[in-house]
Image (cartoon, rainbow, N blue to C red; front, side, top):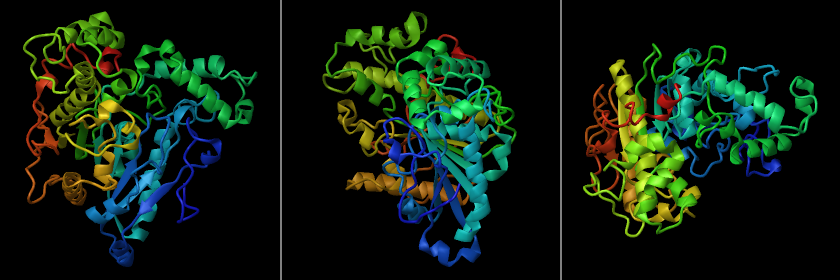
Length: 479
């Protein structure tokens, strides 16, 4: 890990959808954004540090993702912002069983190495030992893994997790080993000496590995090995890695407690349904589509619930999208199932263990490039997955007045949290953000007409989601 230029961004780690000329296995870089004032007064070494881990479902993304220029965030929060890259896909999360690190979680090892690097050099930029880590989507899941890793405990003081699909727990080691065997014996078939030769696998071109990975991930092959991998993060941190991850963060928890912020978006699931389904489908399709995702048995209580099914009278929360009720209903269900409700559940569980956790929902944001071509994400009032990134970093192109105000609020709260996580992410002029309790997430809304107010609980009541009748993914698969 290091830096070879200050005038261009580093190559991303090998990944699909990128020309091989634009990625490199030499990709473990940390982009440091330090305001000039901190460099001038570097001897003080008192500037808070915010280390960011990008999203991308653990198989794509990098420090050059849209909006991740940390310069505006650094200035606004009076901090040093560091954007880190880590190995992705099978190269980061599914190495061969005969390789030098068969237990895997190489991407997590990269994150720990990055934090050690930041701790060793940041004082030269005026940074303090007060390091907050943050991440979005799979980057948020990576933060969960860091929290569960005792070897990372001394490397940061607090954490922020954004739009992490918490319903996916850490993969079970038995599943990880099954994926290893299947990929290197049945999918990656270009090397006749697999599965026993490290020398052989080292000769396979990276582009060949990525092509095989694409077949594995995008043709449904990985789900055929084990359904627990899910769709959103089929490669992810796993337990049984030789000692890095030592807590599940679902039923067992680290002894080292750190202040934590957890946010999700109003419509985290909308990109999925907006991409796969056209506008205007009849609402009677709701039950069939839910059953396709979770099966008839798990789908039955969801289809019978007035929290979601638009065919039922007396909906708890009416739908508002004219002519697009089916996709709105599926978005609400999907967002609750993978993001909002498991996020709140995690906050309540951690609060019950003595953690200080603050929970929020982005009710407004700024359309991220990946959502610009998804009609559902462009409908009024929608805040889709990744739409918080521009707001957090202050990089919204041509922001509206309301987006500017929201960015100011979020960055002001982050500044307060980074400066003194034990106090709270609160600041004069903004509604008080209270921590979660073991029974109430106390989630507040960011943006929209109800900015600063508590988010209605609706289906995230612990008597509904997280029960044996309506379990989270990690409960179904014992993660």
